[in-house]
Amino acid sequence: MGSASSSYRVIYLDVEGRTQKVVFSRFCSPCDIKELFCTAVGLPRNTAISVLDITGAMVSIDPTMPPNAEGLPYKVVPLSGGQLSDKEELFQNVLTQVAEQFSRAFKINELKTEVTNRLAMLEKRVELEGLKVVEIEKCRSDIKKLRDEMASRNNRLSTPNSFLDENKKLTPRRDVPSYPKYHLSQETVEALRKPTFDIWQWEPNEMLSCLEHMYHDLALVKDFNINPITLKRWLLCIHDNYRNNPFHNFRHCFCVTQMMYSMIHLCSLQEKFTQVDILILMTAAVCHDLDHPGYNNTYQINARTELAVRYNDISPLENHHCAIAFQILAQPECNIFSNFDPESFKTIRQGTITLILATDMARHGEILDSFKQKVDNFDFTNEEHVTCLKMVLIKCCDISNEVRPMEVAEPWVDCLLEEYFMQSDREKLEGLPVAPFMDRDKVTKPTAQIGFIKFVLIPMFETVMKLFPQIEEVMVQPLRESRDRYEELKQIDDAMNEVQKKKSESLTLGGKKK
Image 1: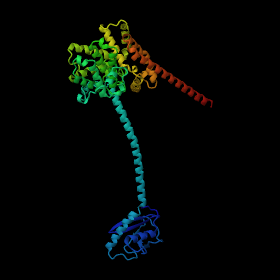
Image 2: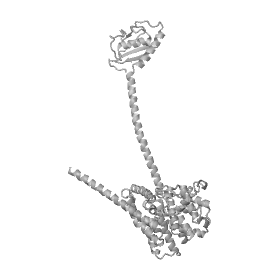
Image 3: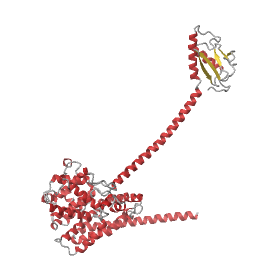
Image 4: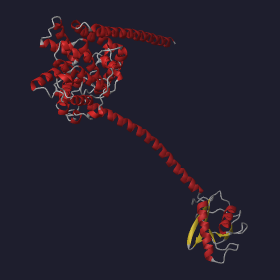
């Protein structure tokens, strides 16, 4: 405030040999100055007070008091016309108080400036904090993307030992006491034998109990002296080694195995196959998609993943499913085949591997053509014929969702498309080829299902029907109905698209005329 402007008044106070400078605002009149002096030292308000100018002349603090500049200050003197105290010390103390009060009272503009500066700083800080919030949200988004990327990398099997090192998964994460065996009602037992069974109504532990029941009901536990506790542990470990994919998960495993179980009953396979064959069919169904990463063989091969490299692009996933299955069985506490002699175990192992490898859809035409050549003169005593039939049976079960009632089958379509879209999005991101039937921009539920039902499912099930006519009513007919339903849905979609197209063309033409 020590401006040279004549609008200010500058007064020096002598206090204990030190000079206190007081600067009065231009808004402070001489009367205000006088009143503040009198109030500060306890004098009557009408007391005459004088100061000395730079020449030593007395200047009264009254309305006639001329303004001064910082270079021409006034100076307060001990006596200025009124009676103070006889003690100089008291006067000096009073002057000190005056200086302090003036220092506080006449720095309003300085305070204003300081407050303004602080407000500006706070506003800047608020702005920065706002930016920080944006940055924090961006960081959160980046972290989420990074997590998704890491999960995706795990799914891509990018590290050489990403699966084989997880030995903890090869043993159950919990022991059998925490896995209760549910008491299945007679209604459930009967429903479990039919293709119409609603697999969506069951929790994991209930599905485990149903699988356990199947092995007991087919007399596999009794005939092969399987330890019931070992069976429980094995099923637990199987459950733990299926990933939480939209489609290829433990419920899909249960779905396929339940369909196999129903076909065994429906087609009376125990009368035509050996019990070893039945054991192989059931065990292959349980294990057929173990540790599936959610990305198919085409992706594995095109992305040159560790599995594709390991298995030389030949059914990488199916080979991996087999490897995991027998790593689990290598654990003594999970080995349901422990009572088999080496030769018998070799037969079961080879049979199980053959069936799991048959689930690679790249081999569909080859396997079905081979079966068609045998079906008209099928011989149940011919090992090659039986093996070929078992391969076709597990293929039927693996892709049998449309055999089930519509309310059971349709959710699986959504699950499969979700997994397809997840893969095609990644393929686009990585610059890999994208199959049209997996592209979210090109496929719909009707278009996804019609071709698959017409050209894959129905021909395969109709070929099996030649051997087992009893499946026509409960399996083939539902497939035909499903095909018709999706074709109707496609017609509706096409009609709506045509209406939308004409509407768009009409709007376009209308715009041109204007």
